[in-house]
Length: 176
Image (cartoon, rainbow, N blue to C red):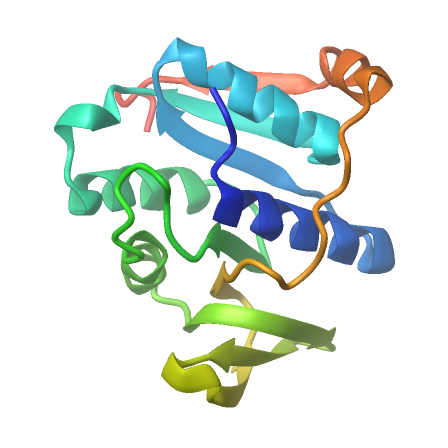
């Protein structure tokens, strides 16, 4: 019932860019009803909308989850998709890359900084030994965000209360 640390950094980055450039932030997850708490926290952090695909991921591999997320994301308007660099439960770090490939959009992993300009995003990504690579990707694109890129905001009780009024949509696999 806690948001994954890497996803929290990705969400914070998305919210900060929405505040600078406009647009909307939609938080999505695939999981059982108990995961709505995670989405409510995402809404409290500043997401405009949240969607939960009602499915038990404990019995799925990353490829199955990537297919579900791809089906969902492809139905939404987007310029930039952000994932946490990895998850605390599975820890594979491959989901974002798989979704980018299935969506047919460019991607970069382990992003530690980004700058959005016109229809492209300039990123820095961290490699082993602290080596930094620089890329420019055309939008739409997908990034996996590394911890430390920002400082996720404190979620106050007032923002949690306000998040109850924001939209949290539930979908089934059949709907996708």
